[in-house]
Image (cartoon, rainbow over all chains, first blue to last red):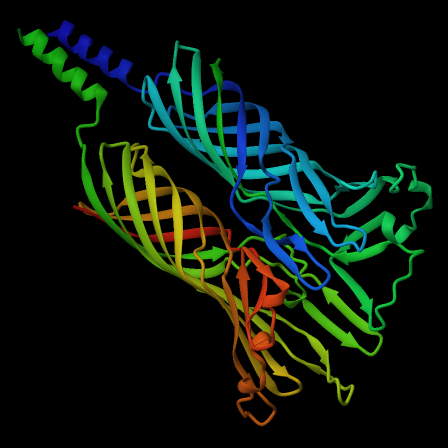
Length: 271
Length: 273
């Protein structure tokens, strides 16, 4: 009888949460796709002297690759808290406009890409399965050091303008659904689908390179109005509509939608 | 033989999951708090103060996810830990107000004309549920996709032109997004339990139409018919030509984005069959 009780107790202990609190580290990479969101942007697909054809353009600035590392802490067998940090290398998005000219139409290209660092603190729950262990996480998405670069060129000349948009904050919610595959006691593979509702509100856009149609550097000749645009929460535009080229441009703050859906894979080590 | 039976029963008890499949229904309500720090360059979403020297514009939050929703859900737990749920609800948008000061173009007199903005829609939400059946407070997480139906964004400006009223509605299209929630289930009695959840919703809405549906003058007379078709209606399209823009036809413009993302607090009752 004593042997039977001991065997029963031993099995019960083995089956339950012996692994309580402990640290873990994950490394991997995600590929993100922008969640579809209209931008209010448009491009000219065809231009004549009397008419123009237009097309709506969606932002795709969230497309890109993000290597990342996660530090987590198991509160118990079923829940953990983790912080993921990484860097988003944005894919290039090109928007082309046809410009009408008396000497012949030409295409103007605007090539954009966005890079930023991010931190995602997250609370995760899982059912505590031994081999294949799914999990759901909910947390915040915080972006920093956002820089969007734009290069505008014409196909009929060497005209070029290069801008950098920066400043401001990027903040949103973050959710994920994933699966751990436990290889050994300490090592596991993971794959996860994550998404966020982030948006970024930049503070300024400045010109940092300019060439004329002949390819000559003309940056020093550019007026302040065309050099720097500041985005403000509050500003006043006058009724005459006159522009003072000696002053920097001021415009209303506008957020760029950066909602994304991403698929990631990587390795996890539990201490 | 007796030893083997005892060992077998112990294994079954340790592995757990004796309570497997379970059907349930939930009913409750939530408060959607919207999401701050979202700005738009469209001045009609912002606060305007006009004067003879110019217009001062103050940015206001351009997220329209603020509202309240009653909802019901039906779910099925395939095991103690994994299940699926289908939710239905209607979000009643809570209006926010921009306190504008406009100027009468004839008298040059300034007057107060507030604009109220809100967005409402119906939604359906299929989800995956992961439950952790420990203690009396049973935590769980759910993640899924949200599809919106019959969306309507209303912009009502009162006292337009010094005592008139103008209402614009944006409709058409289907908002959609993804949601994730963490919740706690607390058993009250054999079949009933209470639940509380924190939920995040990522959702955007691209309407297809904008129309002025109400326009009255200072005496309350309906002057909507005095507007041209181009002034009254706008179609948000993928492509268009400038030759399409006659005053007898609706105006055309690039598709716009209305952010409806939100942070929600859900409360309700669950019945387990």
